[in-house]
Image (cartoon, rainbow, N blue to C red; front, side):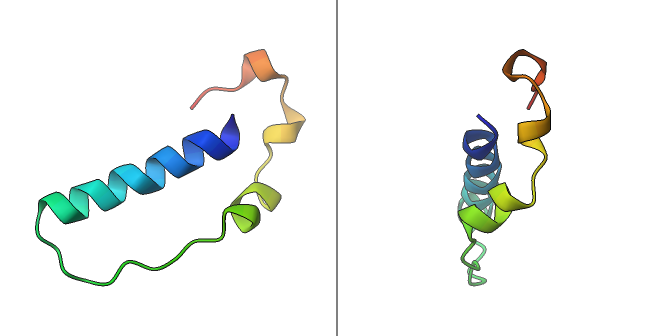
Length: 50
């Protein structure tokens, strides 16, 4: 679930940039790095909030 919310945040930010005609190059992101540095595994599924 944490991976999905991370991805949605990134895509929402990118959509904002596109909608404002911001032509600055967007950097790639490493989804595994984001997951490896999260603490989602420390919470029970029903305790996780986006």
